[in-house]
Image 1 (spheres, rainbow, N blue to C red):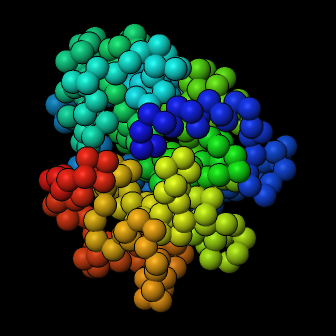
Image 2: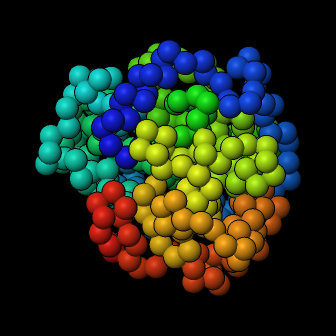
Length: 330
């Protein structure tokens, strides 16, 4: 989310039912069933990217538990979400630390965190000693930890239905491969007990139902087919929403699926300008991206080729940080 007004949006969610725009709040989508995924695909997601590598801190990650729930609880005591920190945790982020939300690589995130508290990762930090972040930070920590264990994991960019019903708010989650059940499991590591109480989250954050979080490709296809309203997707309180916004998340999700896990507000290439009208060529390209990213394992080779071959989609050395309104080297 973009700024401190989002606190009002989150708190308002306490008075709203936890539901999708068009779904019964008691209905939960079934989890993805067992599937066959190519060995090379799983190998790809079992190794670190330039953004998730812990660098010189990697030995610390090796010592962490394998259990996903344990890792999630640990991460929740390593990162604090800046926008809600005052209302949820009684902590106002000092001005000198507000830039922590813009750190991209995991190793640099860890530099900042250990500068505050150099104890092992397994030690819960007080709120004022946690890394300041957003949803992306929680997800990147989990992806990095799982990949250290050679558990295939990937970040997914899309929209959560549980912040501000009936709107779908910009958000990131983690998918990891559960070998026992032969399926990708969606995890939302951001939601500790405080978040769950404030938003009245009643679904399993360690196995998020697919109708509670829509990956960008699913959101795009539903809107293109008239099954969902594009005006409900984005960041509602600042009126950043619509098909153009979903298109931007499509490109970020495509990048994340190619292990370039950038910030949720990084912009490059073909991503549309705010409130921009999309022409036929753009719609066709985004339709293709949506089809590939909705089921990335079924079309993994094509997804990789498209990202690597199309300069409009691949991540350049310099991107535009839309929150800071400036270009930055990644």
